[in-house]
Structures are given as C-alpha cells and as structure tokens.
Image (cartoon, rainbow, N blue to C red; front, side, top):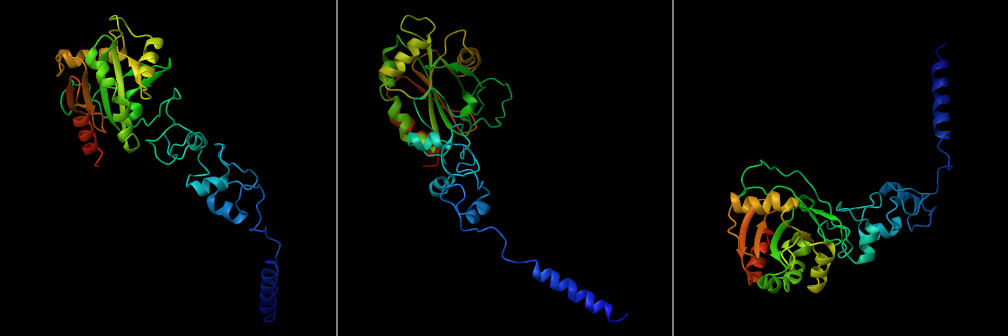
Length: 274
C-alpha cells in the first residue's frame, strides 16, 4: 500500500508535464490585417478577427500609432468619432478639439452645481439652449469644463458688428486649450427674432464657426440669462455686452462695448492657466 502513493503522484506529474505541448495559438500572426499581432491584440484588448474593433473608422493598428484607444470609438469623449477627428485634422485625444463647421457641437456635459439664485459675480449661470445657425440647438452645459464667453449682440448694432470681425480669431487663439465663444443674438437687423437663415448669414459674413444663436425675447437664453442679468444681476442694457464664465460656469467678468478683444484674451489665458 505504501507504494501506491508515489506511483500515483508520478502519474499525475507526468500528465501535467505532458499537457503543455506546443499546440497554443501563434501570437506573432496578424489574423485580421490591422497591423497588430495576436499578442499585441491580446495586450490591447482588441479583437483579432476585426481590423476596427470599436468601429470608429480607424484600424486598430493605426489607432495604436495615433495614440487613440482602439477599444473606444471616441477616445476623448466629446462626441466625435476618432475617425472623424483624424479625417478633419483635429486631435482625437483632446476633448477641446473637434471638427468645426459641421453643425455639431461637442458634448462635455458634466455636473454643474446651480442653486437657482440670482445671477451675480461668482454665481453659476443656469443652463440654456439656443437655436443655432445650423437649425439645431446648442446647450451651454455641453461646454462644461471650458471657459465660455457669451457675447450678447444684435444685427442693428454697429459696435456689435465691429466686435464680430475679430471674434473667430479670438476664439481660435485659445480653442484647443478649452475656450468657446457663443454669440447670443438678441435681435436681427430689424429688431426681430433672428431665424436660422439670418444666423447663418451672420456666421458666414464674419467667418464664425462657434455657436451663433437666437437670443430673442422668447428664447430660453433670454428668459434664463439675459433678462435676469438686467432685472436682478449686473447688466445695464448696453450692447455688445459680454460675460465671461469660468470652467464651473460661474460668472467671472463682464465687458461692455467693442474693443475688448485683447483684454478678454488675457483674462481667458489666465483662467486657462497659460
């Protein structure tokens, strides 16, 4: 009986050793033609039978080269596919960089602590939507985490038009660092509510690719921001009138009239830590 134990153990060890073999997969092959070996696919967590695991328009191997995540179709999470960004020449790993002029805006909506108090210095501005120049809508809190300049203008206002000439350049100077401009158009040339055609014309005339929206009396923006600024806040009725919001959507600074581009740029840079 004492001989059975070592014989059995020897059998088990022989079986374990013999089971290793050389029958495992070849980790050096590229099954799906995406430029990655099976071993590399295993390390990345990508599929070895699909060249584009996340269906974002870029092969897994190219994603590894670009530094994007081949398991996420939108690496930076701002709402544009990695393939769209690379084709447009924007940065797919920077949430503040997205294809401009497409009629779509990023969606970086986060948690903003709004307590519904009167709008004033250091107070959070309420979320609002604007009908934009593409016939869609743009939402303030979609730019959460960014510095936002809201420019309240009108088509009949000469200084507003003067300010609009430099608006695109001001935006692009800081855009990739987390800055956005929103033109809230209170009136068109005749003092009426701006329609999509008029908003698009304003954007085209001044080569604007940031949001240009209808801020007339019946708009969500007018009720939540423009009117409260005048009734309970700081606005005294001048246009162009601009408010600068920090990354938490808190009212940081105001600018009255035209000719403030340099001052605004410096303050934006300060908020962005530049």
